[in-house]
Length: 233
Image (cartoon, rainbow, N blue to C red; front, side):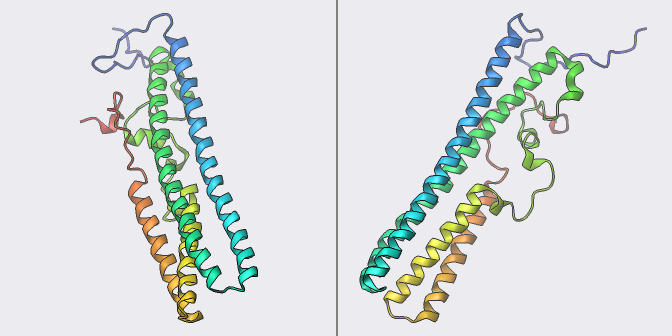
């Protein structure tokens, strides 16, 4: 009796063909490159959105400095700051929201590449030792295909990513607006610092809680076709 072949093809799930046509490899390769291009585009957009926010913030700081010099930090400066800084804060919030959407799109492209990798291994199962990312397309496998999932995530992970950095800077804007408002109401420097600190902390906590609720819990709404063996019922 023959020994079972250790490189036998993994049986495909229901609805997936057991054999591939002669053009399958070329088609899969083209789709793989298409997904890589899509990932490059979303990364470029995320960096562009972050750059727009930083540029707007830098321009606002310069404008505030000029107005402060002209008005000697009077009521005109306070009014100008309380109009400008909330707009900058809003820009930061929508930038973070868009970066979260970009992350969702990126997870979809990774899931698609995991499926294609599974097809590669059905065509040539002997190549499995040379793949460092997952061939499965469930949520855990998608996370394992990303660098962040190679080891336990740090508690500071929400602040390490680009959205986290923007969240901290945006919270500083919120605190500055609150402090300037307190100065405009003649509450004194101490009250201005206290109010600014409180609003900064409230904003940071809000962003941190929201980020941790999103971290690793952004499904792509694409039903897994190749779940990991440890996820099978």
